Structure formats: structure tokens, C-alpha cells
Length: 318
Picture 1 (cartoon, rainbow, N blue to C red):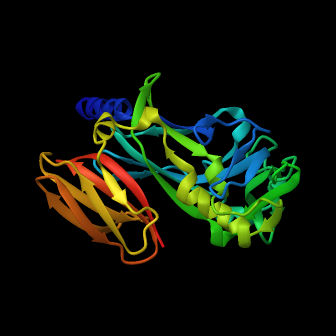
Picture 2: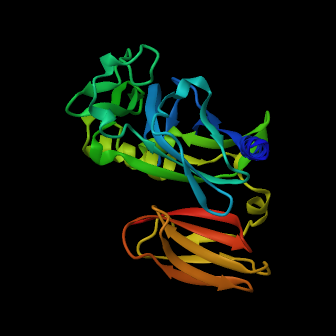
Picture 3: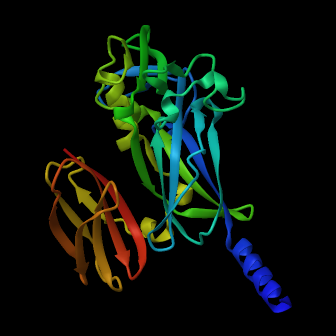
């Protein structure tokens, strides 16, 4: 009996020691600049804007680690992000991870939580009633994103995009390593809200609340463009591969991949948004190859050397 107890104690101690405190830190940006409210910026159409409100929900997180393993975070982890805070740190808990390779999360609130009564929650809960409100109503649920400000040539036209709806509950993936900080691992991610208005005409102002039109485009932009690895969470190996290119991006059915060779057991692995393998190519020398993307969606072109992923590029295929 004593031996069994000692063995159990040793196993439990090892399990606890193997766990690492993991968190995600968002760095709020407008292009290459740190985000500030009421700061003039422009989207890719050359339309000027400045924001006075930028709030959104992030839910259903997971961490990719240690050679492609995926650990789901509790569905109770809900964060209301306010871009005016400079950075937002989201604790993800004690996890059995050693090397973090990426993070996944959803923009918005998942069902059935999206349609429950916020008044039943404690006042300090992210989904409790807020002022200004983030809740649209029981039928439509929460505002996933609330973007407000001014736009137009003279920055005097009202700009309001409130995006919501179960059909717009999207997952986004960021390839980023975990950085050792204060005895844990932190994944640093940039959130560039300039790209949230990609391809949205706002030169004459715009007010759209709902789950369609420009409000839906904004949510898709958050999925496709807003989030990327911060410089702190880009691997040294990835920084060294200056010639790793994927063209065109966005793509229309195929991409050209090129990079210098001479890596040990190098290979290109293309996966879709769910992690399903699409293409696998082993390479030994300098390479320039065309890869076909079967359907519209988001893909990841990953370069491996041995078992280590040393570069990754997100590709949007139309």
C-alpha cells in the first residue's frame, strides 16, 4: 500500500511539474502603429477613418504544440477585447505543453451561449450586460464585433459596423511560438484593425448592424487578415528564411511556392482551415513549385525541416 501511494504521489508530482501556465497576449495595432482611439488611418481602398470604439469577443481557444498536438481550452474561456487597452492578455490555463506552434480562437460567441440571457450572469462576467451594449437580443445573440468612429475625406461621416450572427462564427489560426515569460509561455499576436475594414467602402460613412453585408465582411476580415504573429512570437528560423514566398496571396486556385533549399528532411505541408492535409511535398534543393488549392477557403503553407515547422504562411483562396 505504501509503495502504491508513493508511486501515485510521484506520478502526480510529475504531472503537475509538466504543466505550463499559458497565456495569449494581443497587441492592438493600426497598421504598423500601436492602436489609439481617434487616430486617423486608412484602409486598402484609401478611405480614411478614425475609431472611437473597437470591441469584440474571442471564444473557444486551442493551442497547437509539440509537433502538431492540439489542446482545447475550456469553452468557458470568454474574453471581451477592448482595443483601447494597448494589450490584452488572456490566461489559457495550466497545460501540458513544451513548445507552442500556434493558437486558434473564434471571433464571436458560440451557441447556445450566444442566445442565453445575459442578465443571469454576474456583473463582472464578459457576457453580462455592458454599456454600450454588446448584446443584440435573444434571437440574434451578441454583437461579435462593435466598430464605431468617423470616416470620409474630412472624417466627419458616421461609421458603425456591428457584426453578429451564428453564420458568422468563424475560427482563425495564427502560427506563433510560445515565449518563456515569468515561468510560463506567452503567445504574442498582433491585431491590426486597419485590416478589419479591408475592401469595405467607407468614404461616405457607413452604418450597418446585423449579420450580412459589410458587417459580415468585417467579421470575415477579422478571420482572414486582422491577426498575425507578433515579432516576439516569430521563430528565429522563420526570420532567417527571407526568401520563403507564396504567390499570389490572395490566390485563385493555385499558388507558386519558392524558397532556398539545403534543409534536412525538408518538406512542404499544406493544410486547410481545419488542419486537414491537402498537399505534402518533400524537397532537397532550392524549389519553385505550383500547388493547386481545391476550393475557396483558408490554407496554411508550412515548411518543415525534420519534425520542426520553421515557417508558415496563411493563404486565402477565392
